[in-house]
Amino acid sequence: MKSSKLLDLIRITSVIAAVIVVSVFICIAASRTNILWGDKLLKKTPTKPHVIVIITDDMGWNDVSFHGSNQIPTPNIDALAYNGAILKNHYVLPLCTPSRSAFFTGRYPIRDGMYGYPLRAGESRGIPLNTTLLPEHLHRLGYSTHMVGKWHLGYQSDEYTPARRGFDTFYGYYNGYITYFNYTISESGQTGYDMHRDNDKEIKPDWSHTNEYATDVFTDEAIRIIDKHDSSQPLYLHISHLAPHASDAEETLETRDFAEVNRTFAYIRDLQRRKYAGMMSAVDESVGRVVSALSQNNMLENSIVLFMADNGAQTIGFLENHGSNFPLRGLKFTLFEGGVHGVACVFSPLIKQKARIINDLFHMTDWLPTLYSAAGGNTADLGVIDGVNQWPTISRGNFGKRNSLLVNIEENLEAAIVQQYKLLKGAGRLYDSYYGENAGDNDPSAPAYDVDAVISSPASQAIADTTGTITTQKKILQLRSKNMIVCKSFNKYANCSTRCLFDLSVDPCETTDISEQHPEMVQTLEHFIDGYRGAIVEQSKNPIDPKSFPVNFNGVWMPWLNNQKL
Image (cartoon, rainbow, N blue to C red; front, side, top):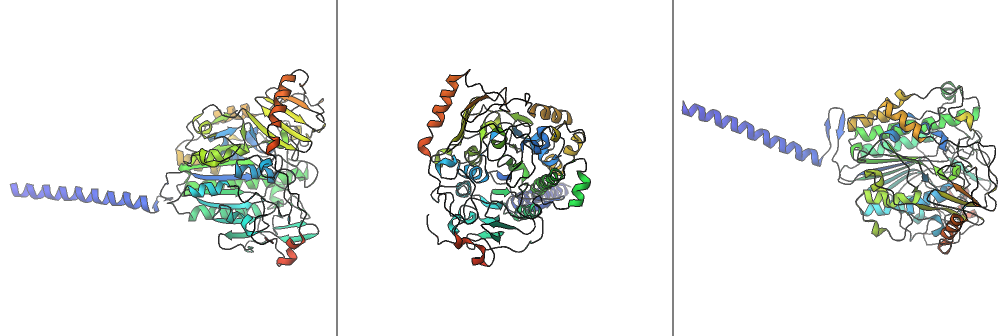
């Protein structure tokens, strides 16, 4: 009898031991490899967060629906905003090259000669090679780094291309814009192909996706990178969309399916604005697909997803895209709010205080120290930068460290912000309210805001699958209402050819000059701007080099100079 009980005890002990051994083995295997759990691919979670940056090109303040406009629904982008943090006072540069330079360097573009008119195809100019870029910093922290889409920061020699500036791979275009289906750009009477697949060993054109819509091509590439990512490394993925920039094709506003756009946005009376809505809808769909891919690969739970515009919309003029900066004054190329007060939001499960609006000042230069700090880096290692670390503000709700910023200095046009005051000099009377009142809630033909569409969007569903919760309908409507910018009458507005002082806290649309009432603030801001004049590096302003023409490279825009510092 005792012998039988002893045998039973030995059997039970053996079973328990076996279960423990198997459990330990499964835990070890799960930590070292990717395994399937239900419908999800479980990947090892690195200590450092994945960083996914999504930048649009020439998108207006009024072109995302979480800012209050009903005309163009952006449910996936809105889902990121409502479940993360909305950056209500995010400032950029007024043009694409300077803005992207500020992002990658953490420095005002005046320090690197990257201010002023954007880089043209065949122009031998770029961020100086002795300036370290964000992907190079993250690479040193162990990140796998990949870029998809627009570069526009120099490609005169191989050394200036993104795959030699910190990115493991690059798939996209070097210049300011391309056509959406043929991937070409024209300059100085020369038209060439501009789509490339580069790595540290090879710089070459890529012909694999001709006649496919660029927004979809870039999205597919981003998802391919996510799906194939080595889970033992943190990922930095930079997605720089062509949309909603106009192209120089015969039809400058190119949509994926014009018939579908006409059906979906039939209520938008202006045909060009309707096409723009189709371009923005494709971007929103892209955001949903990318966020879903992160969730499916078990990466979203440890990711920081940043969505923003590089500058305001080019509502009229050269390469106009019929975007809307309403109700902000001005447009791309200008230092009015419509050109430099940009769309931005950030989602991450690492944000402790979610579903909130951050009113603190942010600047494009802040992202380098902010993301570097979030990745575990010491910002003291970053050298001379103008950006400040905003990660404590985003993640923990700490009071923002920035109370001033240089908007820009360029010849006779300059501006800066200190606290709520903005000084603007040399800007004239311009007030572009194109697609203004009829682009928002005052458009009687626009449908009501669909909160259910936001909650049921792919991005929201991915967030719910990852975090177990999403922001409620009531909270969404509260955030949307608080996030709207409401302005005074537009019947009168100040001439800023000499100078204007605005109190942005009560006059965000820059209608009333208060410089005579506050001469002390004018003096403070002028001293602030003067403090940066010694940092200005003269822009090279090199002419277009005929050696760069595509005719010399089988019809492709390619690096054309020997590898050397210029």
